[in-house]
Image 1 (cartoon, rainbow, N blue to C red):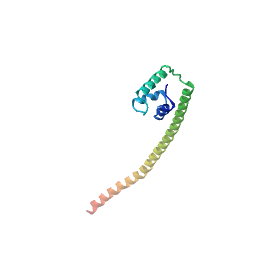
Image 2 (image 1 turned 30 degrees about the horizontal axis):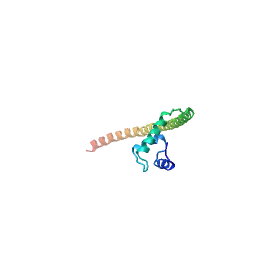
Image 3 (image 1 turned 90 degrees about the horizontal axis):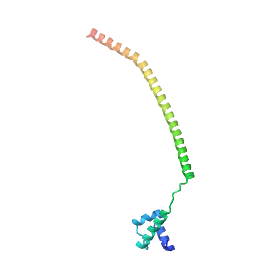
Length: 130
C-alpha cells in the first residue's frame, strides 16, 4: 500500500483498522483521502481477501464450547435445585391448607348443627309465643 505514515494515521483515527473496515469508506469521508486513495484501499482489500484462507482455531473453539457447556450445566443444576425447593414449598403449603381446612371443618360442622338446632328451637318458641 502506498500510503505515508500521516495518511495511515488519519485512516486509523477514522476507525479503519482492518481490511474489513474499508467498507466504512462507502459511508464516511476522511479529509485528505480522496477517490484515488479510496480505490487503492479497496484494491488492497480485494488483494487481502483473495489470499485469505480461513483456518479455524479448533482449540479455542472447543475451549469456548466447553466453557459454555459447563456454564449451561451449572445453570441447569441451579434451576433444578430451585425447582425442587419451590416444589417442596408448594407441597408444604398444600398440606398446611388441607390440614387447616380439616380443622375448620371439624370446628364448623358441630357449630352448624348447633346453629340449625337453635334456629329450629327459635321457630318453635316463636310459634308458641305468637
